[in-house]
Image (cartoon, rainbow, N blue to C red; front, top):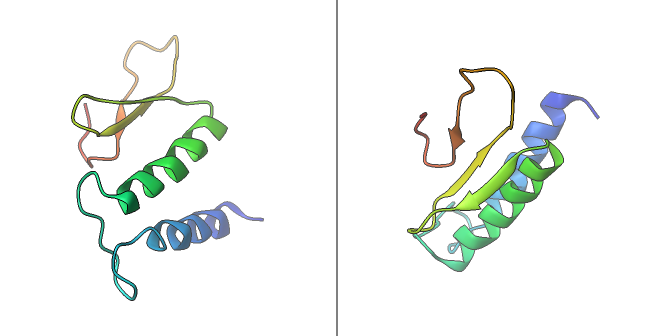
Length: 80
């Protein structure tokens, strides 16, 4: 399977993690959000990333590297 196809397939899987059929709705700390985090966490693990949840429930992940300016990716959409 090509990388673009994998990305689209994973978007569809995430869209199924919803509280409202026919829409993509994930309230904070809801079951839908927890299911989405579980999927993303598994995918990050497959990519060799280390993941954690912070004190308020954000899923965070990083890649260990020897490069000095590695970027931290976050599901909050912010970059550190």
